[in-house]
Structure formats: C-alpha cells, structure tokens
Length: 143
Image (cartoon, rainbow, N blue to C red; front, side, top):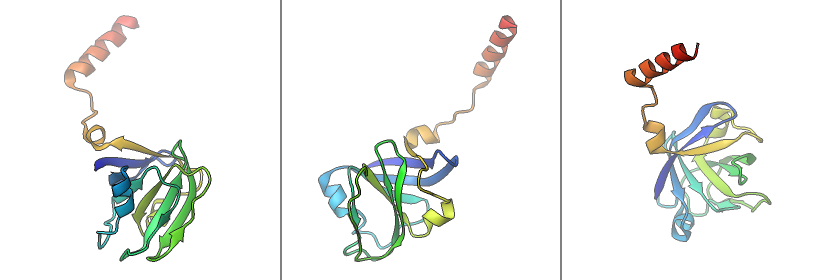
C-alpha cells in the first residue's frame, strides 16, 4: 500500500503524518478490519469510495468525505462500530481518522485536504548555502 501525508490546506495544518492509501478492491474491502486501533497521526484514505461501514471493526473512527478536488463535503465524527455511512453524491474518497480528530484538528465542511508523498514531505526543503549564495548574487545583479 502507498503511504502519504494529509494536510488541511485551509488551515495550514497536518491532518495525518501517515496515511495509508487503500486503492485496490482488496485493500478497500479490508480497510481497518484487521486493526485494533488507529493511532493519532495515522489515517486510511479509501479511494475511490463514496460510502463506508464499520461492520466488524473494534473501535470508533472519524470519517471525512472528500470530493475530487479534496474539499470536505461531509464529516462523521466518532462513527461507532457496526454503523454505515451511506454514499453521498460527489464523494470521490473517504478519509478515516482516529475518533476525535475532526474536533481536535478543527476540520470543517469546505476545508481542502491535500495529500503528498511522504518522500516529498520528509525532504529537506531549506536552501543549501550554494543556492542561497547564488540567489543573493542574482538579486544583486538584477538590482
């Protein structure tokens, strides 16, 4: 399974540092069934998916439905085991988070969630001394 990071672009905050992507039919069918918990900072992105259920699960989760642009179109806080979230028009995928995440992270309808590769998120984006020197030199030449 692919791993990503989820950010709330509307708030500039991290929603989950470790997002597992369930993209195949088998991965989507299994979901979180083999888990006994979902630690804070982790999530499952089920795509494509319009609805979810918690049949057979051992713990509650928060569920966020996103459209094709990553905009939150539905939030289900603290969805208990043996429940169902019926499909909603416009849902492209569902993000399953630890119960309490929606409230703790201030996630609301209309917020935009973006996913990025963990490799890119972990990359050191600070400029090197060489890059900084070159930028300074170019700035001086232009001025």
